[in-house]
Image (cartoon, rainbow, N blue to C red):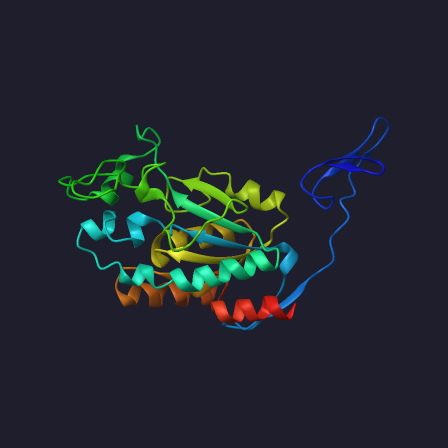
Length: 259
């Protein structure tokens, strides 16, 4: 992308250098603030939509779709399907208002060379069932293996070629991934977060984002878990007390539309 006084080395002028034969312009002129008011708890918030992204964690077939891994274990996946429609609407609003959408999904290596015994145990605690990356008999699932059906985003939510995709192999989306680098190169400071499971991958991703200095906002109806209700209560309590804010998809969409 060429500028009148040089070539832009970056995604946008506010994120990159402009260079020519004689000069490197590192000023990175800031974009105008898009003040966006959102009803939230424990307080209402105002964010800059130009510095916000929607991060969706693990809305994958293995967690959310009949015939996936969790369903094959006899776990009621209906709670994990509840966020599908709110996420779909929120994603559409983000695209309409130029808010980046980032899909963060499990996708383990076939050889599991970056997976520890403790992580294998978490997914196969008794050692008597298929583990990470292995096929589940009678299903389409190769448990969370990168490139498999089980690791794909559910059909009801079209991830979109214009969105950003990050593959993870731990509960947190920030551990040993390029998520932080992607967000910083997009100029993101505020994260709206949804997905499953709320008390596990969503919570650890949100906590790590908070530790890295991002503003963290859980979109509650865009998140869910198959864990007992007290796990959700604890997660919401700690987010509002320590790690950020909690809002709803309708409040986010109304905020975008009023900007």
